[in-house]
Length: 253
Image 1 (cartoon, rainbow, N blue to C red):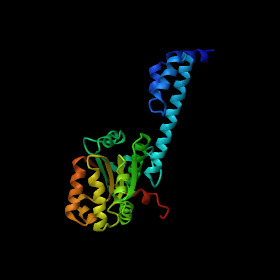
Image 2: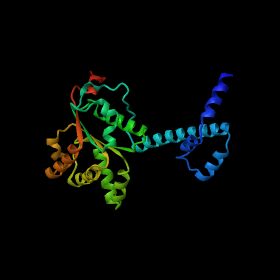
Image 3: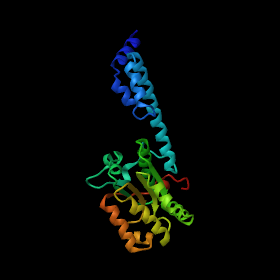
């Protein structure tokens, strides 16, 4: 009895405007829908509202799952249980700003820099997955895999198409910058991604190299300086220090 009464109250509160707002993102002919809504009873309006709400939720869930697949994360890592003790944030910026993804919406950059095994990649993946759940197109690459991808595209005369595809992301994560050497051609290709993203999308880097050694990565001091200049203009550094998680949890002791 109470359930029926509550349903009727909910149904009676459903308005034409509410139903139309729910249908806004659905591929329906709005003029036909409007005419049917105008003729609908309160009960029919309530049914349509429930139907469209369920459809929108289903589409949002499917989109989040699709974005997560397209991002190509190497492992599923999340913020639940993450050990923040090794991360040092700037004085005016911290975990709340990071996890709110304000920096992504503002097309700002982030460098996760520090010792090996301190959670840089874990955090980068977790932030990327969080972005996907919020409907933000994201791509994850190691620096070496991204260079290889661009090199292959260039050799096959489809570099512009590949750059455009990557550029659809609002957040690009480049992991392990400096772990493997990059030749000058690869460095120029990587520079294209960085230069094109400037003030358009957010870049997150993980690296164990301080900026003064990035010239070794790019093989060109001027190119490294140009990269750093773009990153620090709208970017921040989170520093990591401590003993490697893999060493402390190693079976070989």
